[in-house]
Length: 389
Image (tube, rainbow, N blue to C red; front, side, top):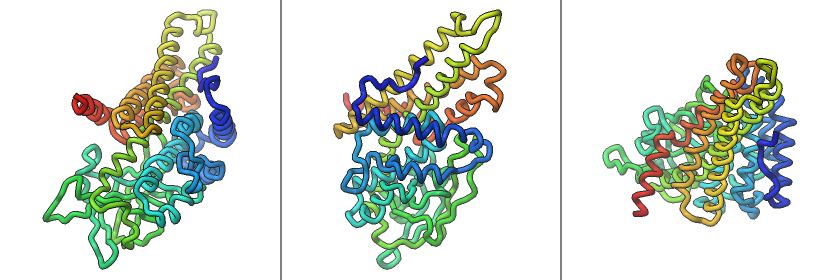
């Protein structure tokens, strides 16, 4: 009943990392995932242990205390974590993708020494805040403002739906640095490195979500938050560009998170269809069930393959925006479809919280929404088609 990652074609290092991630996930995460979901418990101790094993610095270059691994290897590990609990996986994904990508590409040596190295060692958990209550898909319409104050900056405004917003040690926050009388659209946005113990950083209470209930998602109020000039990442006015670069990496992580959710639902369904008997035989023997399982397995493999293909392109430094959007679109819709089929195969039991596919179904939905909705992914893909014409 093999439905997971096929290790035959992996390198020795990749197999070792998959085994390490799988053993950790099965020992430290999956046995507790249902309880964390019920209680909305953010398992920072588990994330810290992952950091000690290197899982928070997988793609960070070795000179900055990371593992310096390729993106495919990182995605292989992330899938194992996501199959155990998507809430833990999203913290791992956000940290490894967007803040790390921003610092590696645009941070000064001083910023990398101060922030990137401890992030890679797992001593600091990072997140990012782009969206606002009135700026979701239209991220360039954000209103939070930074104003110069001598050699530094003062930030004011509100951010919404920030993963790790109330639990991270460091946040990359996008705010406007143009003036209200001379708005420059996306070109008026800059990125700031914000330690969350800075006075004026005020996270709200964790959101009460449908799924990913053990992941911390919070609104953030920025109230007269003062930062030194060294907190500006890269060039002023380039924050939106940096965010989009980070989201290309982030979308691959969300794609694989979705694959992990879908794969685990498939694994549960395959096992259940052997155990469950109706009309005197296991339901796996019914052709209608076999066809459903076949379609589920095919979609999981296709979603994983596309995400890995995009990762290979990223590691070649090729443009990956279109393919990352394709991977996220396919994987997220696969996760929603596969978990729906799994609930159907479990029948009445699938609707009960005592059975695991109910949680997987709830966790799957947000992958179609965050880091760019499916509709936004289709816009990105379609525009890319015309830009190559």
